[in-house]
Image 1 (cartoon, rainbow, N blue to C red):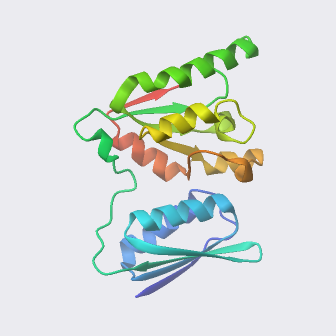
Image 2: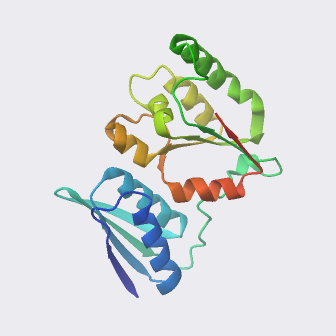
Length: 200
């Protein structure tokens, strides 16, 4: 069975949610989704991958066509499956919604954020996911002094996720240098799976 979705003009997470609904309802072997922004393209692609589809992406002018094809009996893994490094450990998710830590003095806030990100690795294998949203996405873009710290966390097995809607809002999608583009479905599902959520 084949399913075709036209999600152009829809903001995240709508394209992912529509794709999920079609898969849940129709169980297709092939899914084709058209979107018109990079965030939706990355999110739909990652979701289809997580559901056991082989994914190809093609640009058609300003549109993006994502095609997912089931191959054999590939077992699908949950969108929020924990990395192997976290097996047997508590899963802590940290959500950062700003590019400074605390309120008051902006210069101090930047220093505190730098120190926080460098020290976050001390949580060890329990640190499962780091989600950047709202102004927090600015930590992960070209020119940010925080990219190196985020890359170090990623290299240690921490899932770093950056809100696609937020990147689009600030016009930063092309400047993202670390992390996977995510959407609200991923974030909410991750909150359900996590043993603890810490908001910064």
